[in-house]
Image (cartoon, rainbow, N blue to C red; front, side):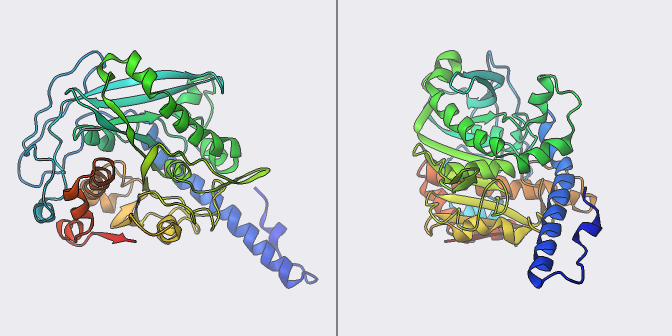
Length: 402
């Protein structure tokens, strides 16, 4: 790393040179801080999670969930009502669909699709309801260095309410690259490359577009999926760098080398959900990148969602503030850190007692948004346009709208 003397102003430096030096030092410091703090996040995201899907006990009842093998399934039982359209008044007391949903869910742990055009395999994890029906599709994009194995506290929960969730593993994944023989690759290197390599910025939205192209093939290869994926109701969601992926699919312009303002938008995508949204200054995003984003959008951030001097809570709100008005939502959760939106485990001990509640607020707001814009659920939209989330969280979670 360059020593401090490279940035020490000499007597003959012009004011412009001193300003440039300060900017360079700040940029390098930001990259280092983000990379170091991301190690904990990557550890959580690359680890295979186990146990039941998320359920916040608000009424004293227990809801059981199970991960089923891809060859079959058994029903999941829920203590909550199967009513899919809870009123805003009820949600203000108990939150929006926090208990495990009424549908049995099956998991396919590692499906593999081959993209002949790019000559690469795309690995993905799938959750889908056992019950016959046609369900909206949610694609979840992991954070830098992560994998398909993260975040099932969200994706399994969503599936139990009638969604097919697809979780691809991207090229920056530590898990996948280690399988390919790069056994000594470190977390720091994976995150650093994600920040600096435009090829990784480009490959992520290409993975999502390929996956959407492959929906018919998935339904042929996985018997339980036959006829269950509704290609007219598709949402893209993601965490951290996965939020960048979702933003790109929604039309955020990306500056690639020799290709400024690249547009990865896909008309098949109807809504995007970003957990810790990505603002300008990373992954080719600029202050003008979000100007033409018009799809329904929800961002979720928090008071502790800070990864260095650049990526603070205000920075995470920029996509919400700069995108086109209409059907835009921003959830701000007091006490939530960068990992709080995907797991109830935390490396910050002083916030451990809040972790389950914060994940519950995330699930509540996220599912209401998905129900409103992928299912046209009037009750869900009423929830989004009320103060129910703030009341059910006792003021910890606040929802803004544009």
